[in-house]
Length: 388
Image (tube, helix red, strand yellow):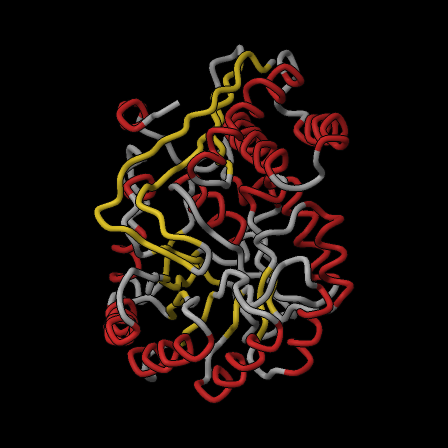
């Protein structure tokens, strides 16, 4: 079997309303899918992390840089391919967009391997430790409105997300420490005793401001404080973790095993959040997961993107060993973006229907059982939204 074509599909549409987080506002939804075709008619699908113009730039890396490296290769040699591509790109970026591009290619190769074997991805990895995953819903995005409007909206939206059946909810912050604490207080009220809530700062604080917000989160009972400071500030993460009682989480902006080794050896995270569509794909994710568990750091995957990313993460979460084990072990959760996303909800011929599963199954989502990722994208849908 040989690889005969690698195609990037960048999809985009205008959102019904503008959304924001601590770094920017945005009004378009983007997804970057990777399709790998073989001479035996088996096709694999993957996804690259990165919105907007980042996706367009990554398309060039996938098709113009990586594709020539892998044409004619056996897709079953996915680890050989991973290291060949990484080594040839090492001089041009061990992190960032080259790794995002390689991630989509690698995921597609695993999808092919599952289809060749007739087995779902979680079986290829070693089996499912659980047949369903609890899901948390994130929302409460920033908008161009007053702090008073944010406070009221965040309280109501938190209650609505818990009311949908999600076991927990996650909010955005980024209006400034004092305003952010007010919004956190509103989300704590909206969540009540029905679930947990988490706070995602998208690295907008200085260390001192992160301590200010983090101490408020301790009193409010938040489960974790996500990316409070810049991902490069490893010393700051260690200081926050040692000085706050709330869990410190992060890692979505880190790449490959070497970047993750630095994070974990620094002991700055209570919860690791690797992004499989960015850090190097499934092959590298499994190595990072092993590193996390070797450092006794629990993992809750960062999930952002289309149904391809969601399906991939369902398999990975199913195949994740319990840490540390026992009769009632600590369990991971699936991150689910509750905002408008056609590329998650309508991309597949048979949708995953995460919202419906959560509502019907007390917050739980089943693991796909078909070969590979267990999904089939709708090509007509792709053609309708493809921009490049």
